[in-house]
Each structure stands twice: as C-alpha cells, then as structure tokens.
Length: 272
Image (cartoon, rainbow, N blue to C red):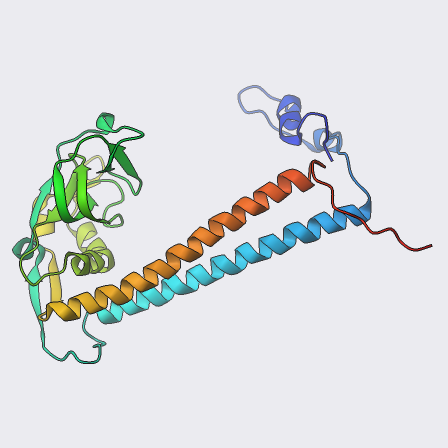
C-alpha cells in the first residue's frame, strides 16, 4: 500500500505522457509503485469493503423498487383508476389556469447567498438560499427553461423565485396544492415538451401552464388522503437515500483507511 509516499493518482498524473491530452500506457502502469500488506490482511480488507459495498447495492436496489412502486401508485391514484375506500364521488376536469395563479419571479442568480435565510428557487433541481423573500404561501415551482418538465418543487412558507421560474400558487378553495404538485410531477412533462418554445434552449411560456389539464377529486378529503399516502412513500424513499449516503460515506472512509495502511486490521496468526 502507498504509505508515506505519493498517492497513486498523483504519481500517475506526474508520470503521464503527452502535452494537451496527457495519457498513460502499459509501460507507465507497470512502474506504478505499490506497498502491500500480507495476503491475509489484503483478503480481510477486501472482505470488509465488499460487505459495506454489498449493503450499498442492496439499498440502491430497494430505492429503485420503492420508486417504481411509487410511480405505479401515482399512475393509479392520480387518475382515479384506483379509488380509495370511502370515496365514490366523480372527479372533474379542469385546467391549471382555472385553479391557481401562475407567474414568474423577479430575482437573478447573483442575488443568492450561501447562508441566506430563505429558499431561493432557480432553474435547477438544487435549491439555493437568499436573504429576502417575495412569497409566503403554498406553491409549486417549475423552471421555465432547463430540465423542461422534469423539475418540480413544493413549498409552503417564505421563499424567493428566479425570473425564469414559474410559481403556481393561490389555489382555489377545495384544491390541495400538494395534490396538484404530485399530478404535475406525473403528467406535466409530456405536456411541457409538446408545447415548449424552440429557441436556443427549450422554454415554457405562461399559456403552456394555464392550459395544462388536470383531473381532481371533487372531495378535498380524497385529495388529502391521496397526498398523505404518497407523502409516506416519499418519506420511506428519503430515509433509504439517507442510509445510502451514510453507507457510501462509510465505504469511502474504509477505503481511505484500509487501502493506505492508516488503519490496520488484526490478523490471526496461524497455529504452528
């Protein structure tokens, strides 16, 4: 193992050949210096790392399965094809423009602050921070360009909005904003791509939002029950993703320790 010497990555960079595009060849790789422990200690390190890697893989598969289940649930519950016990009233067709107010923000990217007090919704999946807010309400945030129809945020509180991000808010009585959020997340993407403006980049205009058709349960309680079920699945996925991040961090730490010799595993001596 490389202990007390140049790390392999740095050694490879230092010994790469070429100018504009440095590259490696078999001769260089053959000269890469390695410091190795006994075979038994190598096997123990590999076993420890493999165990944590297998745990990460199991979590990845479980997350994928949960996401697929959620996708199926949304397809059924948000269309009324599967109805929950106790609800039998018909659903109604409406448009986003009929049930909400839709407008863009007024801020620019340079307004963000790393330690800002309020969330700042920009044209990406990442939520920035800012020191001011223009809204204090329940809302859905959708970028008007960049990741068309694939980025949705839900917020209920104080926040700020980029000038190319659409805010869907002020929902009419009897309409759950969170239900609309889930419905848009599931079905708005195709509508957006079919109605995007083809310029330098795909972009969305206000009429595209206003004309988007939704199907809503007439009973607000049915909307809220569906939201609660989907929220619970989201919470399960979030918990699994947090566990995966922790597991990956542990794996990275183990590799740093065990593959450099900073941490040594006890090796049982073979009885003579």
